[in-house]
Amino acid sequence: MEIKEIVNKLSEKGLRVTPQRIAILSAIIKLNNHPTAENIIEYIKKNHPNISVGTVYKVLDSLVENNLLKKVKSESGIMRYDPTQSNHHHLYCAQTDRIEDYEDEKLDELITGYFNQKGIRNFKIQNIQLQITGTFK
Amino acid sequence: MEIKEIVNKLSEKGLRVTPQRIAILSAIIKLNNHPTAENIIEYIKKNHPNISVGTVYKVLDSLVENNLLKKVKSESGIMRYDPTQSNHHHLYCAQTDRIEDYEDEKLDELITGYFNQKGIRNFKIQNIQLQITGTFK
DNA sequence: TATTAGATGATAATGATTATTATTTGAGAT
DNA sequence: ATCTCAAATAATAATCATTATCATCTAATA
Ligand SMILES: [Mn+2]
Ligand SMILES: [Mn+2]
Ligand SMILES: [Zn+2]
Ligand SMILES: [Zn+2]
Image (tube, rainbow over all chains, first blue to last red; front, top):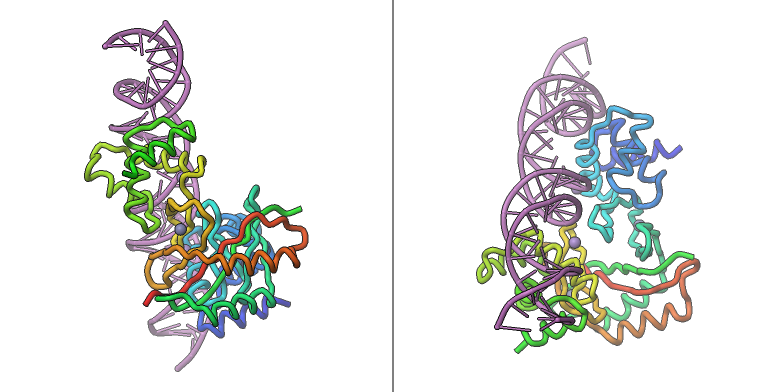
């Protein structure tokens, strides 16, 4: 049961366990395609019709701040949310707003190796993310 | 004189050469740090105080559509504009909103080579862009 | 069960971007 | 050099994602 997991994650971070927070995290995991705040609200309203838009945004921000979610920039500028903590890349569809995860340890090693040798002058690298644009087939 | 160049670029694309378009392109080149629409407006108003906000957005869109500009997604979601046509990557400052260009032919070859062999199943790659986050020093 | 800091819901406000429309103008034709 | 008119602009209003406010509620702890 993954509700238990969600409750644990919230507690570990010292966040109060509220029905809204559980619903929002569950929704993002269930929806599973980098939903927008609006997507999340629409989904949650089915079982939780009184949830407030402001609450959803505030919860999202606090979950991002506590590393339980990541923000994903979309082509349009509308923010999207990602439940995957581990570092990974994204495939952007050039025709639709679809965004899929792309994980590739070998590629990461290749790039990390490259920059370990070369570096970037005047810049300390914290994180490298690939934005791979193209079409799904 | 680079105004001549700007005029040429506009004509080549079949766009009418207007003072507003020249001013906007010049501003982006001059500002040279991926300015927002607001940055551009502020800069232009000095010499061109009557320019309309809507015009700036419309000109930016048409320049993007005609491949004279690129959009750059920022952390905050506010769109930024880039006069560099050639494919390149970006360095994002983790503390400020600074965005710098990063070009690296060797790196591109490395990544292209990797994907030429491996590919991504169910996905046709059109373009790969690195978002390198860290701090300038 | 009582306490209370923190969370929520309702609502208004912001701020970036887009839409609308009357007026102006760039560029080709005369 | 004027004429013509599709396209561009300025002024203004509208949209829409996100944020702010604040009265009410509630999860966690004692
Ligand atoms: Mn937010
Ligand atoms: Mn735009
Ligand atoms: Zn993801
Ligand atoms: Zn750039």
